Image 1 (cartoon, rainbow, N blue to C red):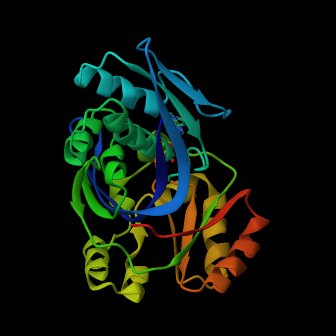
Image 2 (cartoon, protein in one colour):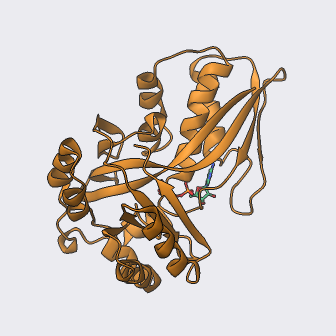
Length: 282
Ligand code: ATP
C-alpha cells in the first residue's frame, strides 16, 4: 500500500492575459501550497481495473474523477497490466478555487509512479499530467511557482515567508468555466506578478502582502456578492492581506501570529461552514 497527501493550493496572484485560439486564456499566476490535505492510498489489483473509493456527495467515483483520469493515463502511457484501488479521503472543499481535484490527480501520478514501479521523474509526470488538467503540473511538485500558459508552464520560486493562513469558503460552489465565461479582459484590474515574484525572492512578507492580486476576483464577486462580503469581513478583522483564490469562491487571509489567526477564525466561523487555519507549505 502506498500513501500520498494532496495539499490545496492558493493563488498569490492570478492574471489573465488574453484569450488563445484554442479557447483557453493565457494566464500568469503565482501559486503556493498550504497544509490542508486530501489523503489518498493506492493498493494494487490483479484484475487490471481502476477503482475509486470515495464517499462524498459531490465527488464522482467513476471515470469523471480526476484521480481516475490520472491512473488511466499512467496505465496507458506506461503500458501497465496491474490495476489499482484508490481510496480518497476529502478534506479540501469542492469547487472552491483550491485545486482539490487537481491535487488528487497529482498525488495519483506520484503514488502510481511508486506502486507500479514506474519511477519516472517528477518533471516527466508534470509534463504528462497537462493532458488532463492545467493545475496538475503545479500540484505534482506542490511548492511555489510562477505558472504560465494554461498554468502548466512552471518556474519554481522560493517558498513564502512563514505566515498563518485563514481559509474561508462561502457555502456556494463556483465553476471555473462559468467565471472565465463572464470575464471581460478590458475590465480586469492590474496584477502585480513581478512585485510578488520579487517579494518571494527577497523573503519580504510586507511586500508580499501588498502584491497579492487576482483578476478573476471582481468577476466572481460580480456574480456572487457573498464573496465580496466575506473578503470585507476578513479584511475588517485586521488580516495583513486578503484575496480570493483561483476562480473562487474561497477567500484567504494572512497573519503572522497564531493568536491573531484564531481571532480571525472565530470571526468567520459564523459566516461559513468551511473555515480553516493552515500554514504555508510552499
Ligand atoms: P480549481 O481550483 O483547479 O479550479 P476547484 O477547487 O475549483 O479546482 P475541484 O474541487 O478540484 O474544483 O473540482 C471541481 C469539479 O471536479 C467538481 O465538480 C467535482 O465533481 C469534480 N471532480 C473530479 N474529481 C475530483 C476530485 N478528485 N476531487 C474533487 N472534485 C473532483
